[in-house]
Image (cartoon, rainbow, N blue to C red; front, side, top):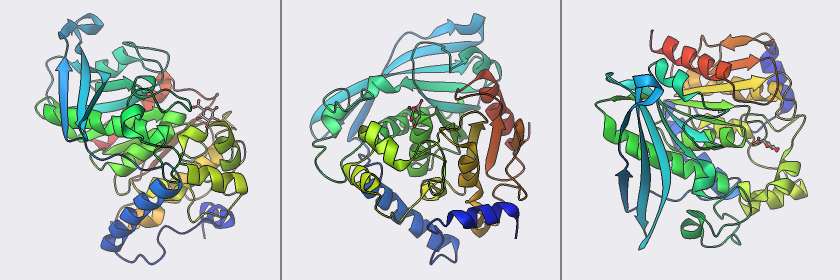
Length: 359
Ligand code: GTR
């Protein structure tokens, strides 16, 4: 048995593949897991709106000194007789066809910021579709602003929609827009990406929406890529106390009481198989716990095997800093330093995608 398998066995996590023998069984299991996580962890994810419209501003073709076209959009929705919207930005390389793209769930907004090196992204031939999570709904217990006002009737229900679910829903709506651009965007190669709390969000969006070919979690830690059982740093108990609005009331109740749960984070991660799950850690980010994030990706091995694919190709030990394990269909990458989404991280993710594209 490999060392990594031993480490996973020691964590003694609920088995995603229990009762699963074939791909078909697994797909049915994934549907059950989606239901389970909506009921017990992130809350219900609202459905597709009855009607979505896009209002696009004037294209600015000279972005990054002529490299790309930037457009500011409003995505508007009608649902159950109500209408609401949030802003979104696209930056698409000029003169290219079929670009791979990122749907980036952003902390800060603006054209570029400390986590979002827009110019570098388009320079490498990737398109960027991005929105600021606060424009969707605020990062707090207030469910009366942004889309929460329309999509969350009450937070009293055990399964009530959480903020993470709302931000993930918004990423899926951005993907609805991306899908209308099949001439310029390579729709088979769209990634969803987020950092930290938004890395958790990216995993949820990717897990519920198969249009995302790459599901990228940067330093997502607790309730993201990190296996909870045996985790160091942040735990379910602590996160549900400080950030209850990221989860549904049932999760907060169970986590606070220390009730045994029928899932660990391998459940969330497994929803994106057989697509490409990419997890990035930072060595000093002990709050997120790089080892537990690594085990989160390693846990997917059996699910990929059902498809004749290779999960993470690495069996011997927890990888050292500066390692990119990208030989398999799931990827783990760890760099030196602290909790951050850096230029180096973006470049590494783009290297990984280009390698998968045979570039
Ligand atoms: C921390 C939180 C983490 C992580 C982080 C972030 O305070 O404990 O789970 O998500 O915030 O989003 O930056």
